[in-house]
Amino acid sequence: MAYGISTYAYFWRFSERAPRPMTLPEMLRDTAELGGQVFQICDYAPVESYDAAQLADVKATAADLGLTLELGTRGVRPAHLLKYLDLARQLDVTLVRSMLNTADHRPDTAEAVALLKESVPRFEDAGVTLGLETYEQVSTDDLLAVVRGVDSERLGVVLDPGNSVARLERPVDVVAATAPHVVNIHVKDFAFTRRDGWVGFTYAGCPLGEGLLDYDAMIAAVRAARPDADGINQIVEHWLPWQDEGFDATARLEHQWTQHSINTLLRSE
Image 1: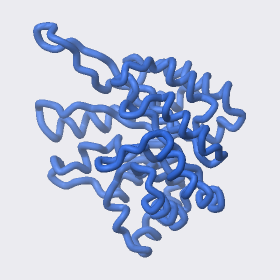
Image 2: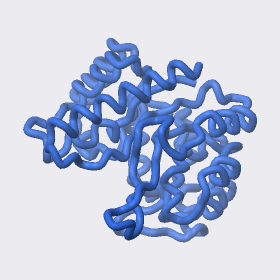
Image 3: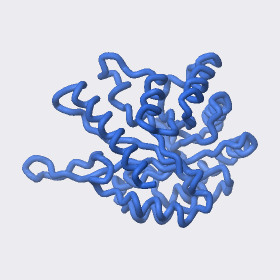
Image 4: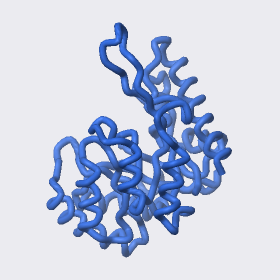
């Protein structure tokens, strides 16, 4: 399995809170310097407006750095997915992550299957895999019903078990159910902490290995269920809360978490 980093690991550093938001080429260079092998451009709206020359520059930068590129978006409307398939072709991408819902479209299982059956054959023809992410807005059972309903080797699951906790699904159950269909893994750890006065909990990210994610068991389950597991990339993400000390402290901690995650993954080989 190759290891990499998502734009979500740079969430605060390219946000509007940054005095000078990081650019995509800067994120690519940082990923290579940290030891990443893959970079997932995930939910990064600017890439949709890049012209052919800009996309060629991104592709060339990644190639020069020895990075494999992946893409990520949201939604299953055919026109949108085919737009990302075109981006994938131009960037030499073979994995696109998506999610079933968008802000203005929440298809049920039957509609999602019907829509994906329009676009997935084009992904098959292009040799590009589409992965649907596990998350709290859609039950794991429904997500798997969609994947099985479309029944394509080029449609699978992007496993991120921490997302589904908000739906009261146990990470271990999500891993077990999805393992045979996993095509990509988002690696982020998570934990509950008591609120002030012990009134409720905060559910947020933490450094890899310090929270509730049983990383070793997750990887073992996917390897046991997928003969092609070595071709599944592991992508580092974070749920890092904004730090009270401000941007510099938040950016510094974001970098530290990313370096720690990559180092942990490399040691796990």
